[in-house]
Length: 198
Ligand SMILES: C[S@@+](CC[C@H](N)C(=O)[O-])C[C@H]1O[C@@H](n2cnc3c(N)ncnc32)[C@H](O)[C@@H]1O
Image 1 (cartoon, rainbow, N blue to C red):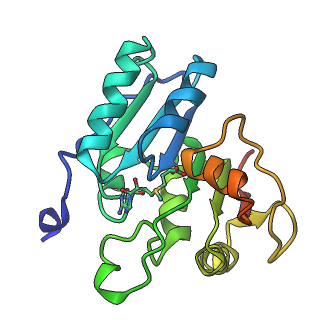
Image 2 (image 1 turned 90 degrees about the horizontal axis):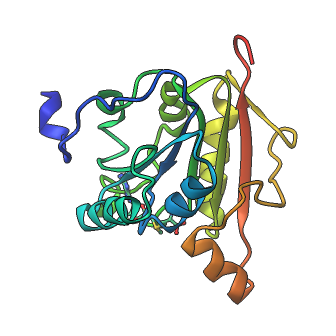
């Protein structure tokens, strides 16, 4: 039964018709979400996060900054809840930044990197939309790349099986800042959905 999988108070999100939508999968403390959203008043920015305390904290800070009309964190499990929350093919951009590096089998149910990442992104993204992924764990990045390369509607912006060197987003995430400070290598992927109009 589907509802057994629900970890969230998931319900369809009301998104203004005219606004482009960005989705950040695993938004953590929401630092990136809030900084990016503060710079992009014309975009609807959604963070998906499985830790409720972080979701509440992010939404409180969005209210304090007066950006809650277009920046929202949702308490949800990205492996199960997305079809209930976000309309199919509505997002202009989907990002997964530094998913948890949990490899052990017992953790797999909660790991952010779903086995079928390509399908998750395909559900969310509109034709022509952009998917960006970054991680400092090479195995995770490679796993993500294999999944995206195998999906027929996505084209790697750098060429097949090629990583992206720089982050095109205007602000770094918390984990990204840590990696940059410690000179830890970051593996980045950039794909566009190429079926239909762009
Ligand atoms: C390593 S943190 C990275 C946070 C942020 N993106 C950054 O780059 O600083 C990964 C985040 O993904 C969240 N997460 C893990 N599994 C998830 C899932 N299945 N659904 C939603 N969020 C998940 C974790 O709770 C955590 O906040």
